[in-house]
Image (tube, rainbow, N blue to C red):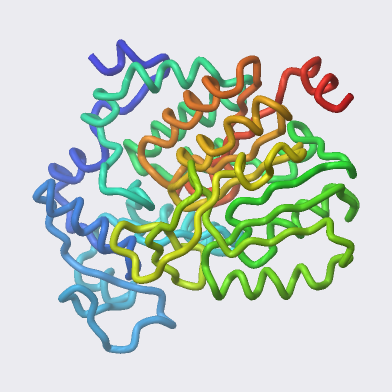
Amino acid sequence: MLQQILPFPIPEQDLWESLQVCGKPIVLYGMGDGALKIMRACAAYDIPIADVFASDGYVRGHSFAGYRVKRLCEIEAQWGDFVILIAFAVFRPELIDMLTRLSLRHETYAPDVPVCGEELFDRSYALAHADELSRAYALMADDQSRLVFAHTVQFKLSGRLPLLDEMTTLKDEAYQNILRLSPQEHYVDLGAYDGDTIAEFLTHTGGRYSSICALEPDGKNFRKLSAYAASLPQDGRVQLYNAAAWDRCTTLSFDGRAGRNSSLQPDGKHHVAAYAVDALLQGNAATYLKMDVEGAEYEALCGCKQTIAQHRPSLAVSCYHRSQDLFRLPLLIASLYPGCRIYLRHHPYIPAWETNLYVMPDETDRRLSKT
């Protein structure tokens, strides 16, 4: 039934259904939040976890979630033939290569568990949202975007590493072929972290810009961002805010972890100011708007409605934090931004993180907005 609705092929069983009947010991590679989420998913499907292992340098005779953490050689000696579930994320080429080599030795999967929220993207979830998935797929502007969309769904359902490799392109391709930034950009950076995405932006504009407005809610990250911004010309063209992006101006609970995993949480230990971009800019120009706001992308986009309508900016929007992001965000963007072109790219990462929407205005509208 599901295959008849979606416009691309998907596996007959999702990963969780396959693991239920695989007949092999299932072992977890890694510790931390990702491992705990995978354990909860396995428990929900009555899938037993036989063991946990880590890279040799992280094995110190300790335990994790009731399992003694072992080395791979111990797992191989004890179990022989087994299934590995990768429970951590990597983006460095040497680590991606390591996991690829491991998958050639043992049956290996990278389960898709959401960064934010609890809804698993399994077959029942895909069935429930098949219409939205199909409509979002139809919005994709080129063949590569359609391939990335289909492969992302297939990966979420199967956890198969080759699907990631087949859909991966370097971020430079998006800058060069889609965004094509100019030295006159008014850049709005939502989720500016420590300044790394401003530095990335400047690399592609020759270090030139008209203005930069950056929001970062985590206090420690904001101090690093401020230190980085101090190296830029102090001429009033850079504005920094220790705040979150939202659909209105308010105060929100926040779980600050001094890293990329800081996020808005209903029971967060801290409180942080939150701004809608429309209220913050008050009509001032925005020609390029990037958001990587750890699961708050939908609300942040809603807070940009007037800015998008008035200035028709290029957008770069993360769409991997929540299970619904893959379809909910492009459908929202299409409703806010009539006539735009929506692209989807996946950059090097295991699992399917760093999957981004790139949105461009109609060329005629963009020329008019700059006159």
